[in-house]
Length: 95
Length: 496
Image (tube, rainbow over all chains, first blue to last red; front, side):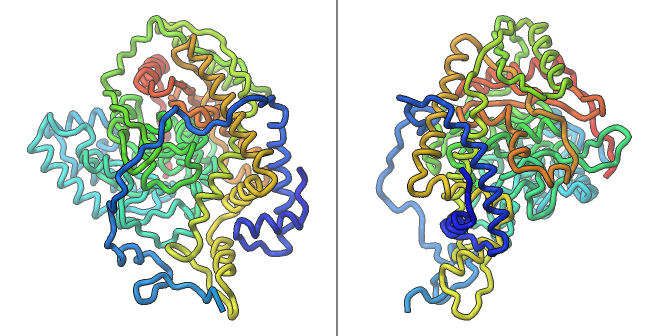
């Protein structure tokens, strides 16, 4: 799989990582290199093989639907880069 | 430097319980060693005040409980920066988590502290545990205390748990925690002449460990000896309702399992691990290791793990896919780095700029690979196919374990290499470091790296014992037999 510059730009946007226009060629080449190498998985006969979903067969546990933690607003906000009146603050999202 | 730092955990435990030494003395010795080892760049955050408080509390407990005190009571340990430690810098060696102080404690470290262990500091690593040389760290690379004979070139301690490996090998602490997603405990352990254990997936809780690839990540001990690793693993392991993949199984007494008597055991030697271009010294070490196990009364048989060559490519689909999903949380909103915005910048600019500034190049590469393989139209061709290949790799091991009790392989394809040596290499060349270890993560099995010899330039080399699922006790016993036969006693000359 060869990744062109436009695909690299699309992938960068999907990943929400700003990549400068002049760096897109290098990025495309790197991604192509890695994806070209994983192409060899195509050689494996996986007909009828189930995808692995867990390492040892175990059912997901359930727990009571109850609040186990909370009431620590200031602790939760303590690491935020910007807060206002007890909320996370972000740039304007809707006009 | 005080001789106290030379003690193993088992030796220190005996002296602490007998009150021949105090934890405060032992801890001060480690703190002095840490302060004298800045050249190794192994410690990302020193925590001397916390260490002294914990040591004093441990001494009080040792006086009160004596022989009944937990094995780790009063033992100074280092903690990989990937573990959240309450109120102490925990940033996964990434600029995107700069300044982050977790308001909670990881389950693994909480268990260690409950048992009286002492934290000397946080340890360097590759950014988000993505790397094999500690060179992707935002703190700069950790340095291996070992140097090739007649050379003063800085070598990598391996990665991603490079700071942990360097700190234990340089005797800055008696043991350290690591995490292993594709080989990140075992490869650095082999590069620094120490023991590293990756437990069965689910044995140690992942709660509070910064997530990289959730279906592969597993915490484990890095220590000077197999016995110390067994003691630490017992302190770290156990069921945790806060991790939905944590196994609700009793934790065995791993130390009691160390008999060294492996008569009658069958050890598999997988023919696919004899790779083309593998250095002759690694090949010879592997043969010597097999002979050691035979001399100890085990039988060795050749086995086949036919899908081995597909493990690394499958890993480099699965791990980046899971990473791209896990690392989506670093958005500049709730914690960590936020980019300065220009006039008119909106929320998407906030995300894209913060992540471009906060993530290093290797992390960016993997997050984008992950986004690509999970994107519409490609999911089946990449991720689903890789998960099917993973089933086949696991099946290879299941079939092998019908006839063998454990598997012996090299731990790494080479000894430690120079810092910067791989700078111009293709990313894939660096990924090949994990060729012998990554299969174990994909299959969820336990694996242990044991120092077994040195190469012609005097650098340590390790072998890997792979065990059955939940068979850490038996695996550690075989590792113990190998350790005793190998009699690895070399230490790095102190140059730092």
